[in-house]
Structures are given as C-alpha cells and as structure tokens.
Image (cartoon, rainbow, N blue to C red; front, side, top):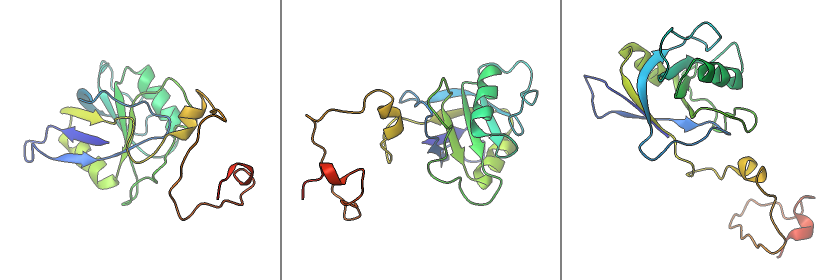
Length: 171
C-alpha cells in the first residue's frame, strides 16, 4: 500500500503504507481526494463539507473500527491512520471484522506528520488486495474449503503436530 500527496517540494515522493486487515482494497489507480486532517477520528472532528476527501487520522482514543465508521459517515473515500509513536503500527492492524469499510491504511508518525503539514492537498491512497498477506479471515467468510483441494505449504516453521493440522498433514 502507498500514500502519495501533492508535495510541492517533492512531487514524486510516495510513502509506504500498510493496509489494515479487513480493509477493502482500492482499484489499481488508487483512491484520490483532498487530504483532510480529522484529529482522532471522533464524531464532530471531521471538517464540514469535505465529502469525497481522504481522512488523515491520528491513532488513539477510539478503536480503528470506530475511526473507520466515523470517516465513512462523514463522506470520506479512504482513511490514513498514523501512529503516535515513531514506529509503524504493527503489521496486521485490524478493523476487527468484515464490514462495509473504507480503504484504510496506516503510516508511521513521521509520515503522518509530513502529510498533516501539507494541508488540504490532493492525495492518492493505493491499497490493492494481494501482496504480503493472504487475508485468510476474509476468505473464510466466503468458504472454508473442500477436502478435494490440496494446499502445499513450503515453510520450515510449520507445526505438523498441532491439533488443528495433525489429522490433515502429509509427511
């Protein structure tokens, strides 16, 4: 995932981001809109009249799911949540469950503060489905599979004696 914002000092800068678990993806070209700082994402913290914007929200106070629901209710197209510490949000940050969410990505505090300093500029959030994770919980909402399907796992760290796997392992 990435976030690009119209930075007059560095127009080609595209920031790395992480897509939240359960967040929908974006089209390949991303989602574009004006960036709007929305504080902690609580109701009433979204600027009036900014339907169609990308919400820039600081981590803290309320859950990620509440931030996402509030951003959607305010008319946002996507949201970027930035950490309050110098580190990234943990990979696998989650909206908690499947739902009617906006594309939601996280960035580090430094990136979030940089974006915030740009003001209301055009931004593009790109969060395609696919990549480093397999989104298994999302897939399980669609199907839990079939005994007719074989899955090969190439990994030296699998615990083939685990109770959930042992009866179905080939060694």
